[in-house]
Length: 347
Ligand code: ADP
Ligand code: MG
Image 1 (tube, rainbow, N blue to C red):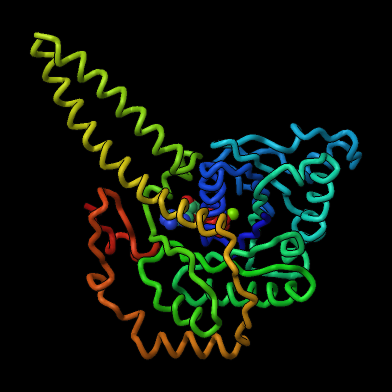
Image 2: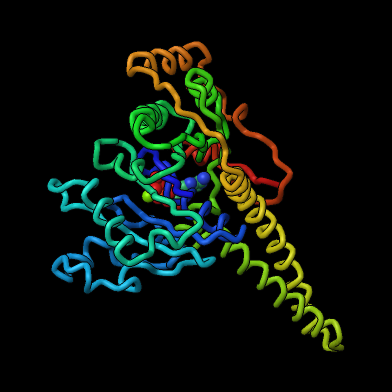
């Protein structure tokens, strides 16, 4: 299965792509993730560092494909996910489509392209020119990431237009939209009901996700680390329990407090990972998907701006946008703009 993940810049494509890749790997799939954003940071949280790009490697080898080995460009990341970064054309020159074409050509020459159950392209979608739409030529499914705002939905509608165009010549379907960094989905729902697109999942803005990026790892690996720390703590507890030394016993009680905090944190991480596992399961089930009819620019402007005006989306009181959840501790923000006001303990 080949997937192409699209969405407006900074919306969370790479975050979602990497977590879907790991979730698919956890379900036993052999996965290759190909970063097709000139930013070349798609696979960063899987490998822990910025891997060399295909374009840079080809340049280094003077475009002699026969001198490039799989290990020069394919790096194994967390959970056994293989990672490739296509890289970008020189800024202001060249074409993203050329880069994607070269990447696929090289992977085919290395006999790598057919070795995977799932190949996931992580692609920028602000401008879906022929170049950036190129991964759709290879994909069975497109996934679009959006938040609950006009700009991301406008970009989504452009991507939908490309899907419709490519579906004329390729067996391509839109699997659905994934909402990210939002508690609300009213605008998303308005758009999908006008266009007829499934919504696979909606993720809130979660501090742990931002942290995982800074730590250059996925939430799945953070969760594993927490769990193994908890096992270590339990072992220490057992040792100190048998000790008669009260000093050690006191420190063991402190350890126990830390350990219950860790338990909560692990609970949150697992809760968030379940969002991604749910998306992976939907994809493994090979959804029917859709070939949607996009709105014209005028229609989407009217639909979304009328909705803004009618429902007073922007004038909502912060407290109304807060929800109570009982799934552990953590911090969810409504959106990055009013992060401070909307933070709350997720207990
Ligand atoms: P893109 O690939 O679309 O450019 P990224 O995946 O790099 O976007 O995400 C941009 C930033 O947003 C990163 O710092 C990432 O950690 C953060 N982010 C993504 N999704 C979430 C989320 N649900 N909650 C909090 N931060 C998020
Ligand atoms: Mg990205």
